Image (tube, rainbow, N blue to C red):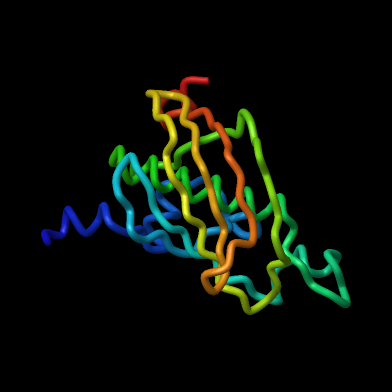
Length: 158
C-alpha cells in the first residue's frame, strides 16, 4: 500500500483538524478509519468525563446528548467527504435534514463511540448519509441526514 493510498484509508487528529473547522469543545471526532472514498468510513469518539456537556447533562448521571452523537456522525461524514476529495482546508458542511433518528441506549464517559457513516447519495454540493453509532458492537443511535457542502474557496468569497 502506498503512502497516498493509506492517507485515504484513515484520518488522524491532525488531518481532521485540517478538514474540519470545528475546535474544542465542539470537535467530536478523534480519528477516522476504514475510509472507502465516497462510500463509507468509521469515526472514533473517545467519550471522556471532562467534556463540558457532562457538567449539566446530567451532573449525577453523565449522558452524552443525542444531538451530539448525531453531530459526531455528521463530522465523520465531513471528514469522509474531505478525504475523498483531497480537501486539506477547513470544509464547511451544513445539516439540511435529519431523519429517522433513533436512540437505543445511553452513551457515558468511558465509552468508545464508533460512528459508521455510509454515503447514500453524493452530489457535487449535497450529500445524503446514513449513520450508526456503536459502543462495543451494540447499536446506540442511528439517523439519516442530508448535508450541504461549501468548499473552502466559496466560503472565502462570501
